[in-house]
Image (tube, rainbow, N blue to C red; front, side):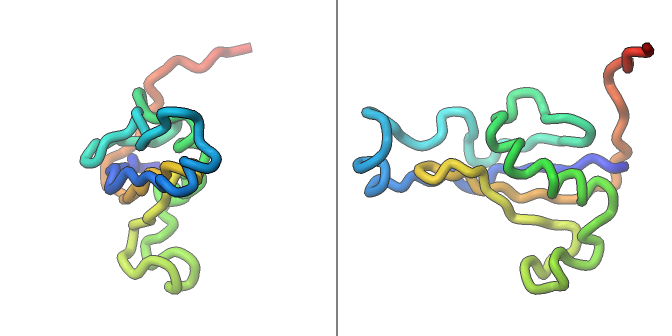
Length: 115
């Protein structure tokens, strides 16, 4: 298993929909910033949004295990091998992320509980 590099490419905000449906004072995502980089393997990286992780973890897991070495989804989605472009599931202020396979070995950084 390898680590996956997660780069925050863009934070977006749909002002029109937010004016209709959003809470008062809603703005772009306060947790993620363009240019931030995280590395993931077995678990959500520290400081990474829980909801964004739920939206992308399956792609992280796939890339960490070698999927996408050619391309994802029969070559009709991403043309760059080992890369996925994903977003969180916040419809008013989605964050766009680039996931990249790396050659860095993943390691468990906790002690599993034996029962």
